[in-house]
Length: 364
Image 1 (tube, rainbow, N blue to C red):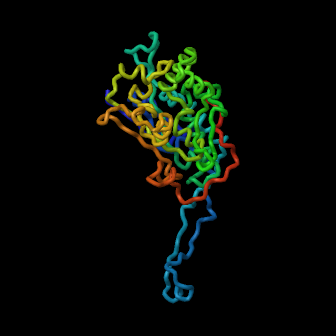
Image 2 (image 1 turned 60 degrees about the vertical axis):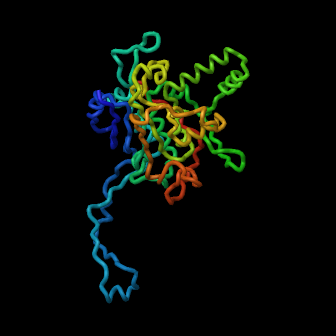
Image 3 (image 1 turned 180 degrees about the vertical axis):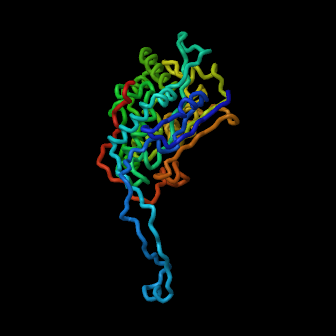
């Protein structure tokens, strides 16, 4: 079967969605949302008061010169512009729940069983596509919504939550608000502004391992890291972390199509027997393509590049970058630049606390 990555956009949960069974039959390694996974804002009719004819001036001359030269033209406004009511974070969240409740989409996102393979202890193995992507205006919750939308950060987070619907370990029982810590201090004050998952006991276990003490801690921590490395973990996803920090929705995923199933079952499947991206997905800390992940790994290894080198095919790998162009012109910094150069718009004003929402999709 050919290797595939599917891309789609403009989905409305209230309208028929006949393509999901077709996509599922193609068995793609990933599905990329290209924008407008939902239409959260509400259409409220047409603005007929804007219809009319008006004189449009041309040039910079004063009124006398315009009359003398008769510069300008008549402008007809028709058809009337549409009226849209902006959505709140609660409404956005509800629309994503409705999209998840579309049975054919949920069946696609949950993957398909491999009939000719066995996982750990003889259990079944399920291929699941990596579902990721970015947003457009209606995902923000506003027609033509952009960086100025007051709920920009909240809508970004709701989209990332939606991407992790149905992913083991991503519901509210396992990802709590207190698991995410954002350092809001600047570098001059000793902070780095980085969002990171709390590691309440993992850090202690790691120290114990380094000292050669507590074999139980060593085994417990190793199992914990293995489980997180094999599967997807929302709190370690750099895209999720950036959304928490209010930086927007952008990132990259890498797929190595030279990898065989036998090579990937131990590395890319978790305890539930899930083979992410058909075994072709390369986890972020292994791919080392995302600049924020590279910085995180370098800091962990004391900038020792030999401790973390990418290991994937350079001829049969595909990197898929996504960027929310309504908020960002470019994702990562250039030399001497700042992180995520923004468009020249004022930042949105929001009094919401800098913690991710805590909710999970309804059980079907």
